[in-house]
Image (cartoon, rainbow, N blue to C red):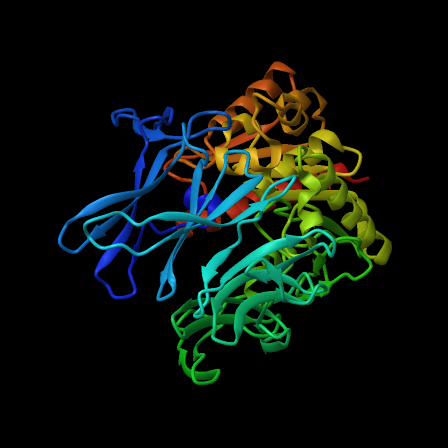
Length: 526
């Protein structure tokens, strides 16, 4: 949950002088056990996994200080029986150590200062800030750190301006009209942050404490990380493949190196069109050749969304559309749309899915489809519309043909969440609440009750070794479809987890999905 839902992939943090560590200790004993088996290898025992499904106990986590001499002391604890449930971030620099903790319902987070102490005693813990939100507190990377002068830097929601803004000692200093994605580092004169002038862009920007804004890497999609005065940034555009460069901030911002890439050149070149007439961020991709394989001047449409929290697909990065372009080259107009719930637009945009994963996300995919069909009525087939996606995108693809068969004529759902009560605590409870308190939120968001509605072709794909979205999701939906007498197909992937990193399997899987869509969409038209 820490890594998947809170972007905390570390479990230890060095002191600035390298004489001590802060270490997270995780006790999984309270977490329920599940078993993942490999039916293709019946001689191998099932693998035990601790999986905290929504509404069930989480792991108990404590933070310890350990000195090189081996002396250790517990600094704080979170979990059952404590006021906070999750340890979401830790930072330690010359100005001091911070920890960010958040309650189970995620409406209150606390920034804790861990004051220095020697090996004989534990650091004292004091509350520097309490962040609250009626829906949930956004915990983006860099949500709290100490600047060189000891001031507290946070990234908080400004509800009045509907923006995420950078605060210094709880006073906003980034412009009220600028959306800040995340904080990269604090400098003596300001904060390096990733900002969004447009939802499709991520720009590296210096936000000065005096209110100044200095763009550093703009016009495309940038990610960056910092250690001290050193910044490593990777940026891309629709025309440029990613490049990684090393910068320093002191005594001035300058590039000191470029990291050479030895990646093979992609075999496709995306032809991305951003559709400004769509009410949601929408990208179109057309076949590289002018003709189609269907013997028609008009193309079938294929929606290829993720569509949910945490992930944005319409980004100004060429590499982000390689697979979408390959799909388009098979004879489709591919539509990638980021509806409400996805990041990049505003905090209110993301909060539109509070208590309901189904309604807004599906409505916005249809709005994007309508905009595309209106823009190109003579080039597209409105009676041949497919949708495919993975994970949340798989959930959305299955939802589309179950809830709106009048608009979607075939779907491929990869590793879909079908019962949100089976997904993890940190993600699901943030948006739907505790299932014990809001069972209606879970009912309106789940798919199994919609099973009798299916009258369009649906292919469901799931890795049997998936430890993120358990294969139980697909099996429960398939059972409900069978009970309702609704034809569908299930493709189990032996030995495959949530994603498909094996190149041969991934390539063959892509061909199987596109063949299913080509065949079923051809049959759906007149």
